[in-house]
Length: 388
Image 1 (cartoon, rainbow, N blue to C red):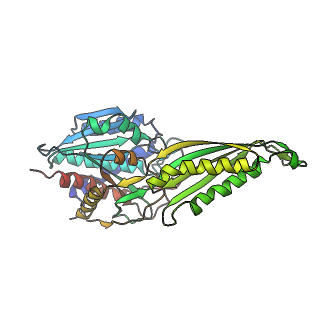
Image 2 (image 1 turned 90 degrees about the vertical axis):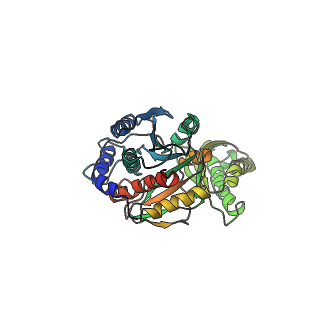
C-alpha cells in the first residue's frame, strides 16, 4: 500500500503550513504564535476538543472516531520549538527572527501531525480516540516532562504514545527504529575546583588549580575506559574549562569545568553521578585542592517498548516505506523519553535525505517527507483502533 492518496493531495497545503512555521520560529516555552496557529488549524478542521496551555504552552486535541466502543486512546506527539541559531540555509522562506531557526525540523513535525489531524478529522475511520500532542520546549526545556507533570496522560486517558523525528542522511521514503534503547540520556555536571593562587615563579607556594583541573579531566575519562562494560555505550565529555587566571604568569586560584554524561543504559546512568563525584573529589584532594560537583539531571534514555515498536513498524510498512527495524541507537537525547516513561510507545526516525545534520545553520527539512510522515501517524491510528 502506498502513502495515503489524501496526503499527496494535501502536500502543498501542509508544506505551506510548514514554511509559515519555519519563517516564524519560537524558542522553548515561548511558542505562543506557533501554538495559536496549531489551535486555529485544528479548529478549522472541525476538531472541537482543543486544549491550549498544557505544560505551559502545549496544545492537546482529541479526535474521536466514527465509533468509540474499543475504549482505546492513542497519543501522537510533535514538538514545536526552534533553536537559537542564525539561519544559513539560503531558502526563500528563511526565518524572519534573527538568531532563531527551525534547525531541527520541528516545524516539519508539527506540520506532519497537523496534516494527519486534518485527515483523521475528515475520515474518522477508526474506533476510539486519537489524542494529538503539540509540545513546547523539546530543545533543552523538558516540555515533554512539563506536559506529563500537568497530568496529560491521565487527563486524556492516553494508553500508548508515538512520535517521529526526521533524520538527515537517511533517504526520504525510509524509516528507522529499534525496540529498547534508541536515544541516550543526557545529564550535565559543573565542577568547581579551588586551589591556591600565586605567581608562576613560585609554584611551590601555590596549589596549581589549572594542573588539578587538568588531572580531573584526564581522570574522568577513566570512568568510561575502566568502569563501564566495553560493549555498553557511555559518553563523558568535558566541554568547557575556565580558570580565574588573567595572565600567563598567574597561577589560578579557581577553575570551573562543565560537561555531560550520556548513556543508553539506565543502570549506568544511575551510577554516573557517584562515579564523577568520587573521581573529582579524590583527585582534587590528592593535590591538596578541594572540588565541588553540581549535577543536573537531563533527559532520560528513550526506550521503545517491544509491542508498540512492532505496531510502528507495521504501520510504516503498510504505507509503502522501507523500514530498518534494528537501526543502531544514537547518543543524542530526546525528551519524548518522559512520555515513554509514563506510557508504552515508540519513537521512529523518518528519512530527511542528503541534508546538513540537525542543529546545523544550513539544515533544511525535506518537504517530500511530509506525505509519508502524515500517512504513518494516520495508519497507526487506523490499525490500532480499526473501525467497526
